[in-house]
Length: 146
Image 1 (cartoon, rainbow, N blue to C red):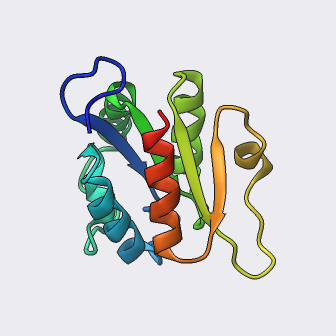
Image 2 (cartoon, one colour):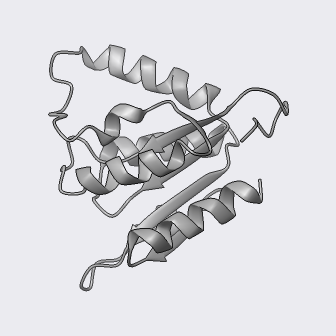
């Protein structure tokens, strides 16, 4: 899919998912990122690596600067926010300030609820899903309607 801003080049997608907050959804991130590749280039593809520990060997300032550069260059932000993550929350706040289109995917588990700072933000579209195929339909509709 072409970049919606300029109409040329591949769409740049920034995917957000928990790293240090917990890697229980690593396989899900991997599968979603593989699907997102059908729409464009996923800048943060490493989030889907099943063996990703937490980038311990990279200085935190380098992680921050790299990820902010990717956020700035992204055409769209897709986040899987079921596993709470301070870093993902920070990224989403920055992306809202940048005016980026943002889709947050959340699996309802037991009586847990998505943070009101995300679900209540007018700059974020938040959806609840149960199965990955449903998440993929939300992604396709979101990207198609950009």
